[in-house]
Image (cartoon, rainbow, N blue to C red; front, side, top):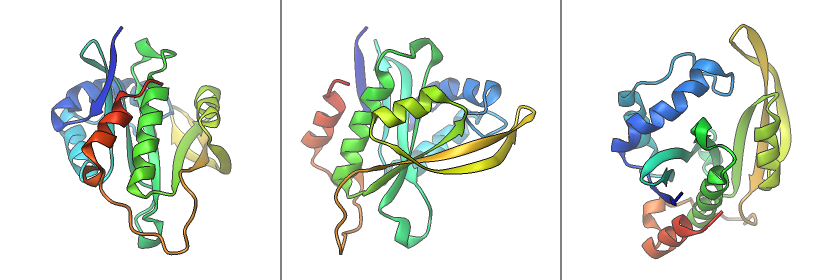
Length: 192
């Protein structure tokens, strides 16, 4: 199986929506109740891409996973933080896809000038918590019984990973589009 990473484009929305839908319908991993339509997914991609990377992983030219960063909070003082989301088609779990996506997006975010990366995980979810711990995340908070889905209350944990050393006068992060295109390509072509 030939795996490749690239930046998402709005036309990828139907394939990504299909990957995400089972997470919404069948699990508490996503707190959405209804899977977003392809049109809504297109809107989300278009809203994220001007600033943050949104990556897709293709296996033999079929999208099998994706990840993206987004603002962790909206207020100005949080601009150096990003939140990470990764979803992989269930048929392609345990093939290193999430690790490849993670490695590429963290390199891009660090180069953009982000300092902290957060992931919010519905628990219990030992696979996701273990994955994040293996990639340098630490558990920093628990929101007890913060979401109700599929007939039960669910806790959410917040995991955090530093991306770079803190500076006293940080420059605002730049768009991934302002990075050297050869650097972006190098990040996307690295193996997991």
